[in-house]
Length: 227
Image 1 (cartoon, rainbow, N blue to C red):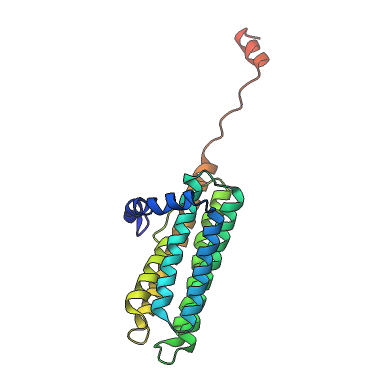
Image 2 (cartoon, rainbow, N blue to C red):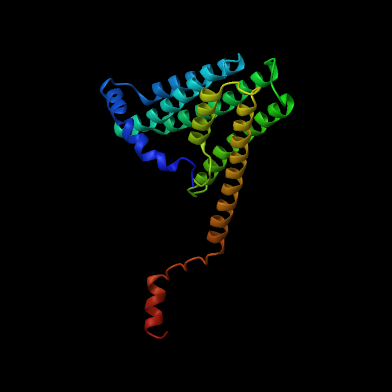
């Protein structure tokens, strides 16, 4: 179960008007994806320069763009295989860039508590966030729908963005460090949840007896006549 699952329906209702406006303006989903990636990369740079609140604001804005592209694609019947690939690939770029920017801030800011452990946690968070997405993609490649887990990309963006925006570098950046630690742990837990889920589904499918092949018509006819 996702942490923010209860907020999905009201959020999508809220963005319905902007989605319709983008469709009327003829904006392509890939254009929105590119714009959103630009925002998240800018956010990473701003984090690295030490502007934590502005970095959080830009991160939240990138998250909004990340949802709009899919909504526009579905509502306007513009979904394509390349669009899905493009969106997923740039999402991974954004995931890595965000934590890299925060790690740079932890390394270079003058007054940061637990500097080295915080950078290590950022590294773990990068790896875990990429594994969360890879596990789902690999499972779906095997025909297993794998959306389980407590923290997916939306949770990471919203929680990290809000903490950054509200608290900034407060308490020698310990609030931001705690947020990264929580998100890193949540991502690791999500990876484990997906491993367990795919194992159970795959094991169940492999243990299930195969359905017998239907007998040819001639064999059935022979059996019916007692031959």
